[in-house]
Length: 556
Image: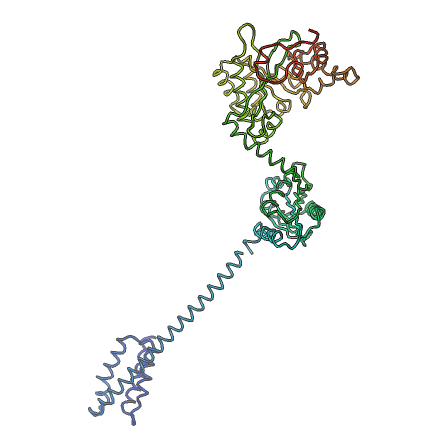
């Protein structure tokens, strides 16, 4: 209140007290009302009550001129009623405030609980659904798949694991915003196309469809074909007309004896099969193929440990001169002495090593071991044969190839001219300028460079003019035809003669691979081929068995 309002209030209350003191009979309710009004006006402190009593006691009796005895009695009773009204009003106000606080606390708690429930509910339209597409996410899909397997509501269940083909190209070329819009469109199409089945987004461009209560693989295949057709329809996204395809891995099997994790792993593997086959298709899970894939994976994963344990060894196959039968060189062939599977040939693990990048450490070991063993060949009575080592494309592209070879030659003492590095045609054709420069440096050091399996790729002799190549190893497919005097055999012979003639024109030596008979050796010698390699001249084995003898020539 303002000062004037306060004075008016106090003046009014004072008048009422004066009236109470003079009234007949004495009305003590007025004192109680005055006390209550003081509290209502927020004059509720202890000092306020004390000052009120003081003013009433000292001023009203004197100002009103009341008889002392009677006035003091009335004054005492009046003060008592004022104090009573004041105390009651103060108590009631305190109780009201407490009740208000209690109610406010109850309301706040109710609001907090409601907010918590709403938040938990939102955490659950977020924990179970993909925020981008609104489809069920991995969590909800796994719950439904688990229920389908464990609920025993059906005998069989199917899963279609879908992934867009080359989706990264869209993200990289048009941006992630366009990519996200495309994912939303794809998700909606899948939902509409196979709406009776649960469609979920697992993340990225991966979607999965749960096909419950299947009667066989055909049921899941029909769903997959419907999904693929829905995805490949052109889509207009932010002004861009986009056409995408998808690959699907299908798993359909009895619910007994399986788990959600096993089903999803199988679907993921099958999806990779569809991708590897070119994409834009579906593949059905094959248990036998999966076992082979798992075995291949286990074999590749064991390569690093096998290197540490010394489980690899080298056999050698001689490269024999067709002119005089001397052993010109020996090709190093790696073997794996596997503790469970026995002795493994290169075709069992080299492809795996190349796929996983493990060919770099494995190939490095082969190169180092071959140089070490070759350094001890020969007894000084004649020129020792060179050692020929195959290099994978990953090894050729390594920046440190030249330094690696230099260190090996220096450490083992092997002369550069007694080391030959073999590369396939495809490796040479796919090699960039920098690796070619490295090969030139090695050739300048005296290291021999050979092209292996020549004629099976797309290289040509004209291209070889710019490469530091010293030898061509002609693929065994051409030699196989020289077994019998047939028209096809004569064709292969003419092809070989042309290759040999052109190679010699480029100052290259020619070695024929896969020579198994004396007749093949004779015909190769007749067309001018320099050397040969194959079972006729010696099967792969320890280096010592080839150094101890010279292969017999045909007709000797």
